Each structure stands twice: as C-alpha cells, then as structure tokens.
Length: 164
Image (cartoon, rainbow, N blue to C red; front, side, top):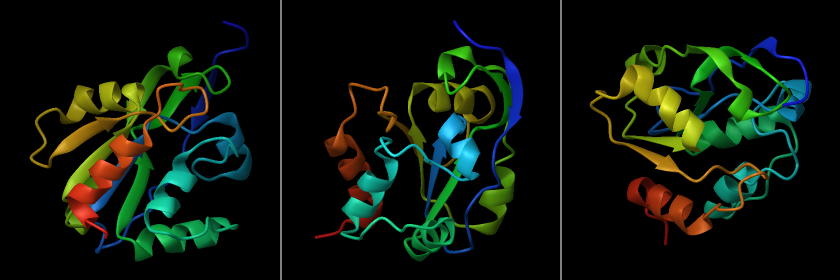
C-alpha cells in the first residue's frame, strides 16, 4: 500500500430531534476532508442516491446539504471518529476510535441505521451489535465499489419513508 499512515479526525454528526434514519459511513475520504464535509468526492454516489430518492437536486453548499438531511429526517455520521489511514483507503484504516452514537440516540427517535459499506458495518458491530434499533449493511456508495446497488438503497429508504 502506497502512502503514509496518518492520524486523521472526522466530522461532527448532522442530526436533530426529528432524525429518523441514521446513515453511518466508515471515515471521510481525502476529498471529503479537503472540503470538511461528508461525501465530497464528485464520483461518490451518496448525494445522487439520497437526493434522487426524494426527487431533489443535490444542494451545492455544505449548508444546503445539512438542511436537506435535516428536512428529510436523516442523521449522518461516520462510525470512526478518528483513525490512522492512508489516503482514502478503508483497507488501510487502523486504530479506529468508534463514535459514541448515544449522543444521537438520546436526542432523536432513530428508527433505522444504515451502514454505508462493509467497513462501516464491521466497525459498527465492534461496539453496537446489540443495539435495539434495526440496522442494515448497504453497498458502499464509494466510486471504488463496483457492486453498488441503487435498488438496495431504495428498498432500505422505502422501509422508513415509503415514497410513492
């Protein structure tokens, strides 16, 4: 693996008392860290998938994306608060500090937790396997994932939002 393993810190969560779904990624990519917000790589399918589900345009600004999430009752965070990582490679992540999801659980009535990819799911299970909220691993929206499934994301979102 090329590159240097460096300690990095993620972003604070986006949520409010009306959040019903918590979407957890693994850790922000280099592009996301450059703009200081989630899913900053233009080829990542996250914003196209979520905004497309609600038939909305992708907001241009970070503030617009935050407003979209809150308006749609979606909380967003990463399972790893900090870790050592080479570039954007999930495979390189070491010494991950797992987020304290109790902060969100205490403030919002989360009905479902969606884990964006295998590493998010694996890290989540280290601390939260026994959580009483239904959770589900979804295919990563990363451009590096050739097995992405829009259908899997749509079905998961339908389980909560059931849009026509």
